[in-house]
Image (cartoon, rainbow, N blue to C red):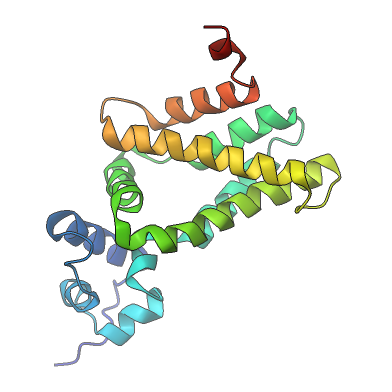
Length: 194
């Protein structure tokens, strides 16, 4: 019997199975061989889809980055802070049936020490997308101070929203993101007066 890739194996199927295993057994206790066996493929086949176990936890991050770029670009008629808020919110709009998997993924990413170094690389990519977009909007270079500040501030706001959402199941992710970016755009003025 061959362990070759079944015709139905997809990135999404591997992610779904892996996230389930990570949730049940923990990220570190789940091996690549465990994931491959559960999907019904060989280890080599699994690595054709994802370069590492860490990449499986992050999912199709290139798609996430493309989605963020497109959402930011759609706000070209809006003021910069509004376009940033709307872009981040819209790029995180998922169908209801995908939210449990996203919550599991984000819980792993935000709480698993073994993923932190890999997460730093992904966060840098996310910040770069935002900084590049902001630089274009401002007519500056991406490594100028203001685009970099916008990238870091946006990432911090998004991460605070995701961490809150992961730890509080009764809150809405999009509402949290929107509120965080409204506060960021206002320079936290409404809070500073308290």
